[in-house]
Image 1 (cartoon, rainbow, N blue to C red):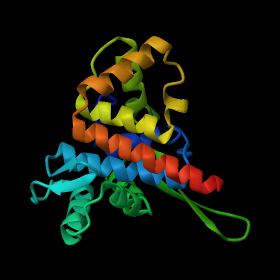
Image 2 (cartoon, rainbow, N blue to C red; image 1 turned 90 degrees about the vertical axis):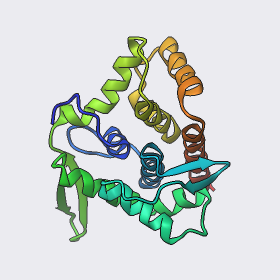
Image 3 (cartoon, rainbow, N blue to C red; image 1 turned 60 degrees about the vertical axis):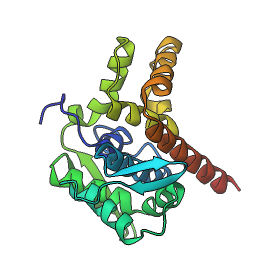
Image 4 (cartoon, rainbow, N blue to C red; image 1 turned 135 degrees about the horizontal axis):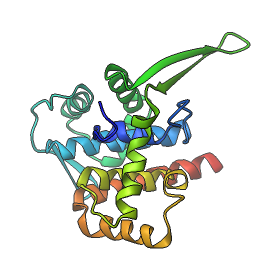
Length: 217
């Protein structure tokens, strides 16, 4: 795979949320989980399997997507058909379900390597280290490059940019963007991101905000 390849939305967000060399996470586990959850739901919107309308998920196509991670979430949605609130699903998937699905998908694609380190008292710490730093860093680089050139982002990258902002990753990813670049990005998000995906990003941002407030309480 070359650095120019575009990965599934949640994979791109996962790589963006980690140091491209050592795999150190730039977010708290809770915020990472919320981002992964929203990204997998976003993948199902992009697959045209679900809609997000007025804070609720509507299944429009129950066929498998062909991707194990996205299909696993779709299957869960089908089993729990009486639960429809987007925030509830973001909260549920953020408990480790979404992150695990994405880590497994990246590992199967050989884009990350699972490494386990033992602490002083025998406790194990697991990290997923990128196999190629250029590929791992490409999602963030791609968005910064397009925005700095004044180019339009495609819809998956607009969702990725929205989730970068929603999770606070922009403090790391967009630090080199000047005011003009940020304004261009915000304008694209407002004008070009479909309403249901814009709503999903907003729901993710609210969930992250609530989690931050809860930790401070």
